[in-house]
Amino acid sequence: MAVHSGVNKHAVAPMEVSVEAGNAGDAAWLDDDGRPRRTGTFWTASSHIITAVIGSGVLSLAWAIAQLGWVAGPAAMLLFAFVTYYTATLLAECYRTGDPETGKRNYTYMDAVRSNLGGANVVFCGVIQYANLVGVAIGYTIASSISMKAIRRAGCFHTHGHADPCKSSSTPYMILFGVVQILFSQIPDFDQIWWLSIVAAVMSFTYSSIGLSLGIAQTISNGGFMGSLTGISIGAGVTSTQKIWHTLQAFGDIAFAYSFSNILIEIQDTIKAPPPSESKVMQKATRLSVATTTIFYMLCGCMGYAAFGDAAPDNLLTGFGFYEPFWLLDVANVAIVVHLVGAYQVFCQPIFAFVERRAAAAWPDSAFIARELRVGPFALSVFRLTWRSAFVCVTTVVAMLLPFFGNVVGFLGAVSFWPLTVYFPVEMYIKQRRVARGSTKWICLQTLSISCLLVSIAAAAGSIADVIDALKVYRPFSG
Image 1 (cartoon, rainbow, N blue to C red):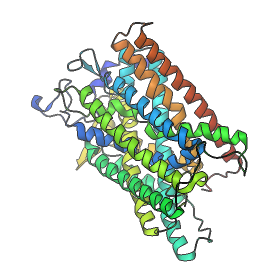
Image 2: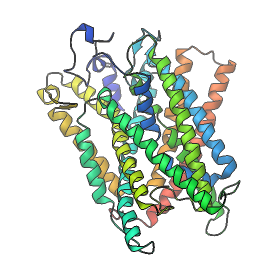
Image 3: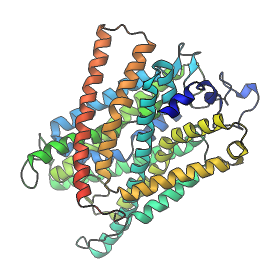
């Protein structure tokens, strides 16, 4: 905590130091804050959001609906979609402090919290946001290795039959993913990874569509929909305690599948200057992205449950609910890996920028930090190469130690959902818009916040119980 309080008095200085240092041209190419002119649009913002949102979370939704059933499953998805969209529109209003077109810009989520709430809230936000982003990086490393391993297993099953265990380690695939991320991590900032986001968004639609198509085909071959109104029944290997824990974990999985609020301000900071205001563009991008995502989630989750019923795997394309056509599974899993390469960058860029701004503010004359060599989209500096490579190496090693993906996903979603998606956006909006304490709007906003806190606590409890169960039978680096 002392680290944060020590840098607060210099809060303005780091904001002047851009990770795009060296890009600045003359005034015609600068925005109102002296930074290189932003070029982002409604479409690039939408692609960043879709890249962040339609992640590997979509593949666990059939399992989540299997825990909740045909009534509560889709209802929970629609509810989380609405809450995410509504609170994202509140958060978009906080990009500028004061006037929505000319007010002071907040470059990061933490800057917005510092401008609007200040004090201990800044430290709380920083810890939760960056811990969540690191957790997402670890989760995506695990997910990519599972998909790469599934490609190998699909070929093995096709050649040797389904009775062959076709076992292999995920460790080499994690290392390969880490090497690729070290390369892409040298792209200096969000503005310059727009193309990676668009490729990743296309990939997410590719594998979601394949999962959906295979689910529909399986449902037709079954002769109808499987599943029940209340989800997995107690008995037949499922105790009442497990049913409760899994139901709570399913809420965490759905919450994680929608999470992107922790990088919303950073995405908004790529949008070109008004008019229209960045908040209006961001709200439109959020509306399109959440609506698109919800339709995909409902289709993929519901068709996966319809195809497999209570036996829905916790990862639709790698849990081998489907074995054939094996080449189509391979295409889907390649698309997942390519998407996760982009999504990893979208989530890690805020961490990179935060550390580099702090370093540049602390040592403004250091050639180790400031000197850059530009090669295409890459900006190589000794500090960036060292620090970003070290970060990727650490997340890769931790991923090797924690290869039970479903449990990690639920826990991440649960822990970050309330503070980042609901609490801070609500509190900042109340402060920014001067919503009167005790007014109807204030009561409604606080009721929403408290309700979501209870959901977060319950989902986290379910995920912790599952992680403890997984640890009982787990050996490090055995994934």
